[in-house]
Image (tube, rainbow, N blue to C red; front, side, top):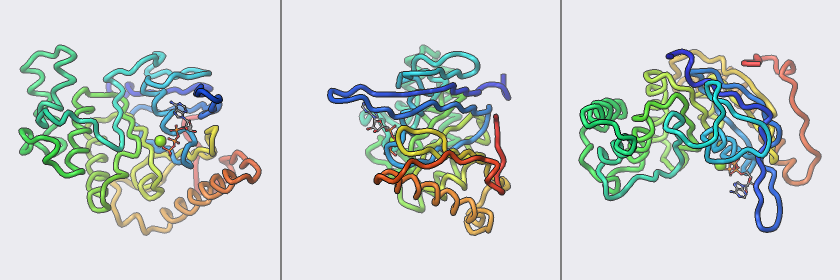
Length: 281
Ligand SMILES: Nc1ncnc2c1ncn2[C@@H]1O[C@H](COP(=O)(O)OP(=O)(O)OP(=O)(O)O)[C@@H](O)[C@H]1O
Ligand SMILES: [Mg+2]
């Protein structure tokens, strides 16, 4: 199973929302594969459909067109094997850290000794064993987000989606959380799809970055990050890093200018990108 699980195939996905006044086309005809164990980040202007696409992979947003398969099976509803972490945690304030992490396992009817084993292991991984009897309200923002990660990871997801998970944290905590996420990913080997507005974060964490166009979101660019792992903060100042960053910022700038009424941006041909390589196609 390991090495194969966590394969995501998005095929001609379109997502539209019907509001009382109009139809909002969020995502148009996106086809993309995420290979098992890969770390991919979606970048794109606000409102371009990143969260909608993530929600569709998770199974709580319906597609209007196309299909999404995870490990060859169509996604129709949320499932613990596809975990989602949002910017703001949704922990139960009346439950302890341990109670919050254990809750999903209880709901799934996992027996007590197994629950204890799984919870102990994951609390250790997120370095919260010493705080297991604390209540979320008494923890810092970074610790709350670690509980949130643990709550999802305790289900041993093969796919993990993170929607701007560190956006509300201060710079120092954010760096610690990024490091921890890479450690968790390395240890647990799941496929990660990550959304951020922070170009540095996208490049530092990912194997691959997808830049989306403005709404309706399509894939404007798709490139691999050729930086060695383990990634370190020193890489933030390397020439290669800055080249990728400049390229991403330019694409995002074009998309936000386009948002203000300029003609629609062209789809970038990947062979035009001298420093990138097309992946998974
Ligand atoms: N449930 C919904 N009903 C109606 N419209 C929606 C719904 N969810 C999203 N939208 C609209 O779809 C478009 C894409 O939204 P989405 O939240 O996916 O964008 P995003 O790229 O995640 O934006 P941001 O960077 O601001 O988080 C937006 O115009 C949004 O208003
Ligand atoms: Mg969003």
